[in-house]
Image (cartoon, rainbow, N blue to C red; front, side, top):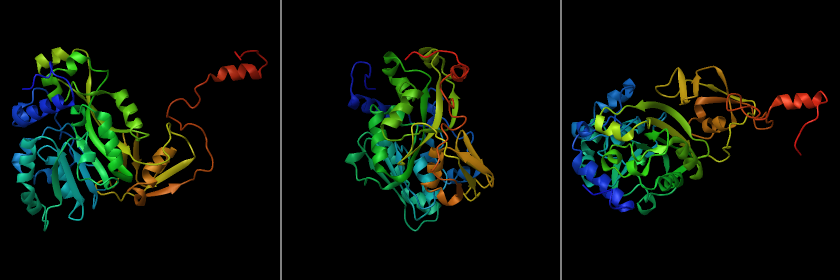
Length: 364
């Protein structure tokens, strides 16, 4: 294995990850921690799709979450760090024959597995021809690949961005490749604090998707810098490290598997602003007939008037979800911060009350 602790730079990190996922890991059971694990809460319709995927593809799967958002029929999807192709093939079944899924990965061994089974999956899903393709490349250099800017409806990634040496570049390229109203929907590993440099240089912890994890607050700032103004957390779960040797290295650091959705939308504001708007869900998104889950804090029941902030309104009205909702209100009146999204007023109201009562005060 590349001596990661003595050499530095982007190419060394790439070499280390290629080595770990191309030669060290031969099957899912070779992982030394449970950071890359998933499927516990997989819905039935996805289990049926996964059941049709070739065993060799499943054996070389190392994801940490589910990357199948809603309303995928006919969509064009890009998978960053597609590995052996499990998510590409699952999504290819969900987008249908009219859709397309493109996988990008840098590891030859993983790409070989994925490409071996293109025709197999086209037959399994009943397609006249494959609707997938796989490209070799680096997710920090998507501009060097045969990918047209503004051409993808959705970009996904499953436990891969933490392995990248230039995460901001990944997010910026993703933003550029999305259509207006498109979204990046991805799972990854995050930490409750910044990872110490000594751990960041540990090749096993890095390959296990732990020591490359971003501090969650740094990730949100980075996403906004890349153009995704209002990151939305969809779901999360704590990661336990059942390997005593690796757990001893990480000490008190807590890790989480989390799924985010980032929308490419004009007009999103830094905070959740209240314009007196609401939506009514029609119950027409496939597999979400009773409620629509936009994110962890927006579970919208069918038929119920659901008040929303301006950003949420845009995420539903200016995206592929628009036809599934009725929209109430406009942008004519602003009522301040949306209730429940931080303090409605960050200042102490008692001072204003005292001033009204004749008390002196103020520092200006």
